[in-house]
Image (cartoon, rainbow, N blue to C red; front, side, top):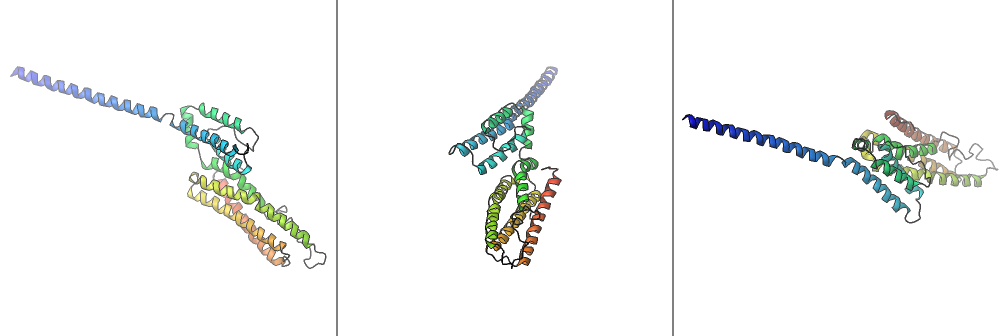
Length: 280
């Protein structure tokens, strides 16, 4: 009986030992698996950044393959995408107008990304597409440009460049000049400013996820207000083109409408920039 008891105790001890070894083995296997997964994860962010610079290189080739250079509208889109990526890695390699060395800028940015440590790549990927970076790189400059063009309170505004202080009933009133000036002013408004508004709307939609719902609505409303103001100004100029601008009260009323739309848009832009501490 004593022998049987010893055998029994020995068997229990053996089984317990095997169990502990198995448990230890399971824990070790789990650690090894976690280490493998961590190793796989390492470098993921860097690869994503490398994919972004590769896409920029591909876009550049597409934009230039027909004429050997980028059209201005294409460049503005390319510049925004490039600068958003550059800002994410805190690079000083920022595009500011086509200086003819875009190949070099791309090469330099690619080198910077290749030299990033894993921690730097993780930080850059987290920052990529932030509201501030997107606004500064893709929207802010264009928004301020169209705000300036829509500012009907200033003497250099397209509408205000036309002399309207004379007596509309005077015999020597030069309607031909008014018509010519109004036509030129309409071209000025419907040219670059309207194209920039279209670009801003496209960039806003493209990077919509970068902004909160409130921020997106605020910027969209501001852009819409600028567009309405410019369209109202075109309406006023078309009236002058038709030589029916004798009713000065109508012009003054429309001026107030255009001014209100502009000032409302300006206030929204100012509030947005103030909230995010952006200086443009």
